[in-house]
Length: 557
Image (cartoon, helix red, strand yellow):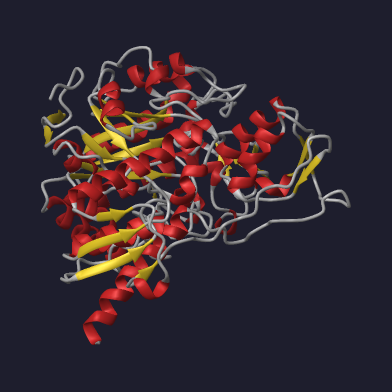
């Protein structure tokens, strides 16, 4: 099989460090660490599964480097104390045992420091961040932070990490220094391009001088803001910083798309803005979710960083190498973006973040399942992998259940990939599906037909339509209804969507004449605001839970 300019499965060097292939697990906050920043078995197992899955290199999620002033999330991993080294060393040992390299991503959150840990966050210049004013860092404080980065790197070295990656993107402290819009200083740490580069360059030089680690930096190629820098400026940063082993391109400042563009956006959205490869080993992230987007990314980079697709399927590289379709990332930005108070999850893969809870099981025999929607397919796949002969009865003439009802084009394109994955697994695991066959609960072992269904929006062609609903289905319907009627939607209807989907949905809705109102009034006859909305993740969890319950019951009856 031919690939792009570079074969993604061939080894590649970062300095004199050889990585077994060009697949990198991108750094993504997991909130799986302990509240004190220590790693643990749950966190280690989560990362180890991606090493088992064939990734040549793993970059841990961003990890804070000193006091809570540098912390951006709850349960964030940290490199603050040498007391953390024994556990971190166990993490690297587990990842290295699978032939995978591991880098620690180090961060100071700067103006985006988590509010409960930092009443007065510090930034290069005093300005609002996330609704809070920041204090301008003094030169002495800047030098202290540089030394904290150095200490964190030394802890990583003692813990047998292969290298460190500085987080210089997404409006964290290093990017705050790099960005002309965020850095208004007039001293040597600002004022001009060289001044804005001084802070990260001094950190790089310190770590280069006092450790033997490989050093990379994650940069926003562009900020995607009205006052933000463009890709030419981002490329200039990459070509100007010295003593680096690689540059890792992401995108965005505090607003979308960042590196998590939803299905409304193009794939390879970052690579499409990179005019040419910089003069350094390059990693690229950005909606790289299948072999085609891997090939395209490797036209401008040496390695590809797989983010959400690594959550959807930890075996992404191995499956591509075997010519299989991985469980697809549908770019929904739902479970994977719930990091205010949640831990890492994936809409299409309930096992993500639960690696120590789910384990391989073995059972033989024949099992009958009713329903070939998401729940029924997940139960069937789980039991077939456990060793059972599986038969499904489906009242429709196709698999997929309610997914087939999606008509919003962008969403439908991505979600249909999940059905393609199920078709592959049906064939591979020899699952029998009897279409156009309706059965009752007494006829089968597991009944998963007919998941929760939400009502359609009621409309009359001549009347205005008032929608107070966060149900995904209803929001899609609103776009179509707006072609025939005047539609009003409450602001709270968008609260179930992540930032990027909110932004793009609003743009699409307003372009079709939809009017957003703050609160429902007497014109809104009904409300469908669900705190826990039944979705693909809920259906998949329901199916896997039913399969596991069946195995347990069979073992005792």
